[in-house]
Image (tube, rainbow, N blue to C red; front, side, top):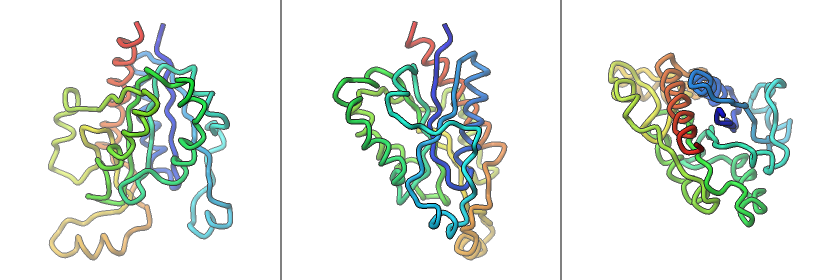
Length: 220
């Protein structure tokens, strides 16, 4: 039976959602069953409007009860960073999983992670690292992207890109790396207008495919 995988994510401006869709394509390529699921929003609409956040996609299910995830074989978590850590929306979700923590509802399941940061050094790796304690408390087995199937993509120095052996990633800030323009542009372009590049989406698709293959082997 094909592994059943949930891609659970939070995305304010669409960057993580784009990665989630690429991860989904990778899982489907590997023959897995996959659902996209949004973490509930915690900010009031008034604040979201002031932040110019677009409306959440109505065609993607919003998680209402943590027990809904217990039927899945594995998870890919899409986490935008806040100071190198998970945002409040994700923290609120994990804080609601006391029952699963006590009963082992997620115990033994596999999970991978992908992230979005404002730019280099924003938490591409530390965001994933900061989530390890939560996974350990639930008995969830972390499956990194690694380099085995994405070495050429992750080590590509011809362009600025997100992603690491910890998982796929993207940058939300447009970056001009030419001389001092890098600093000026980085400071002035924090509008979230940079969406995942083809290379970043390729890395996410590879992660989805390899993660699905791992879960298939683990659940035989």
